[in-house]
Amino acid sequence: MRILIWHVHGSWTSAFVSGGHDYVLPLVPGRGPDGRGRAATYDWPDNVREVPYDRLRDEPIDVVVYQRPHEIDLAREWLGRAVPGVYVEHNTPAGDVPRTRHPLSGQSDITIVHVTHFNELFWDNGRAPTRVIEHGVPDPGHLYTGELARAGVVVNEPVRRTRVAGTDLLPRFAERVPLDVFGMKVDGLPYGTYEDLPQHVMHAALARRRAYLHPYRWTSLGLALIEAMTLGLPVVALATTEAVEAVPQEAGVISTRVDVLADALHAFVTDPERAAQAGKAARAAALARYGLPRFLRDWDRLLAEI
Image 1 (tube, rainbow, N blue to C red):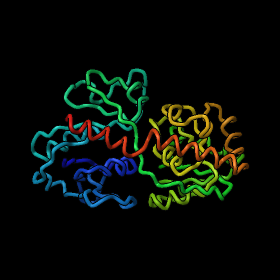
Image 2: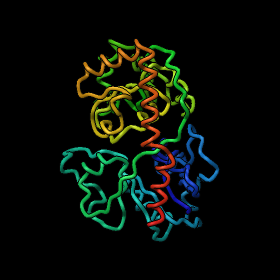
Image 3: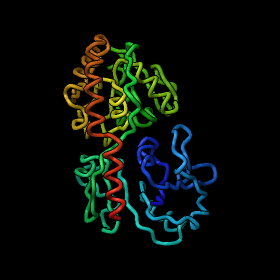
Image 4: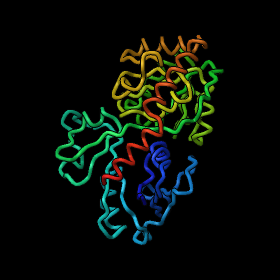
């Protein structure tokens, strides 16, 4: 199929474009949010093409994958015709959560695909058809060495997203364990910081840390958590949203108590053998549930239906 999709979430898109289709990414002048084109920090295959937005009418698009509500209008304008579509909901609802209606809840023509069962449960989807296709991640390999007695954290824009991402909790963990923070706009934090590294470089660097800390309060399920597990890191995470489903007991520690999590992180960092063993369990669990082949099969099935 020829699929029109915007470059919104780099890691999720990397998994999605690993399928056997042709993927067209809009490109706008300046590579703004509505047309970033191909990613600079991900190694995407040649069947992922960036096409200037004003030439999309010449593309024989079969299906559109929306990820933001206004993309529906953009597709209609840029393609100049009606094309079947599906909407991916990456985010948890905001505001008055039990009563938050999804932007597409009033229609029945576009299926909302939630990336976690938590998302599907907590959004008010109204009369819109829904499907859950859980995340899939390419296997980076068991890169874990754990040679550095430090904990890694991956978060984009930690200052802006303070309470959502749990950035305000980091000082309590840093009292027990040295922290290294990877992501976009992390410079200036009082920890080791690694600004927007290419994905393969970040994976290799993260795998040298003894454990992975996932302090997010409110996110559907951070892909960085799954990626850390596939690398072979033991994980320590807040027991919120979908993390309680993703992290089995043998793979790490999840809790709503920060003191329990800080103790667990310290225990992993000071016990390399225990950390490595939990990391192996984390990797096995992540590959079993979030492996790329299952993810692509689920999407192929839905795209064929559409």
